[in-house]
Length: 63
Image (cartoon, rainbow, N blue to C red; front, side, top):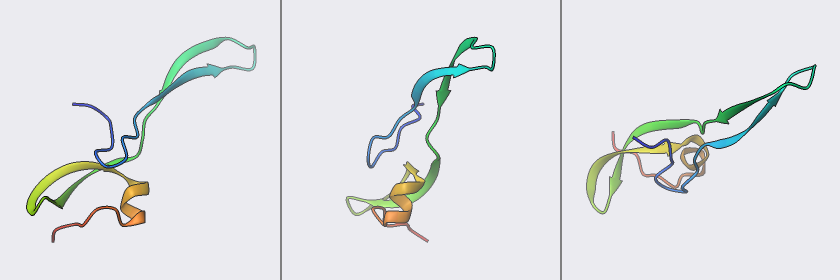
């Protein structure tokens, strides 16, 4: 199960956490995803969408 927005394709970022003593450890920043029942091609489908796409109105939610 991928952690990727099905609308814009936003996925996890990788990088390094740097401590005060400059020790570095690998880390991942995950997108803020929500499972939403949405209308896709005229059918109701559960998709994972980031909150930026939800706020922008790129997804038509089904009640």
